[in-house]
Length: 104
Image (cartoon, rainbow, N blue to C red; front, side, top):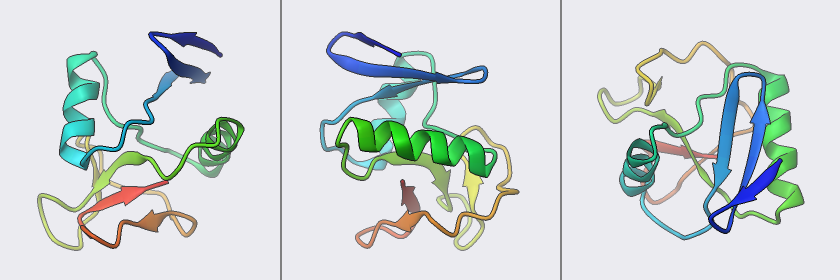
């Protein structure tokens, strides 16, 4: 883990994560990631979810946006990468202000 541009970075497997704490909408967070050549986090299993949750706790992060959403079709959760959601996210919290997007 290192810090770049005042943000915290972490790596899990072949994925790299950047923690940006500025409050923003899901769409703006997605565009920030795209401008940097990435995407919002797409979690594939419980080990990755646990790793990310521990990373967020270490940095006292509030809820953060991940790439899971039902923006394209209500009730059909997919990742912003275009990959379908094949993982059970019982521990994720749906944002109460806009149920199309998911926070961790």
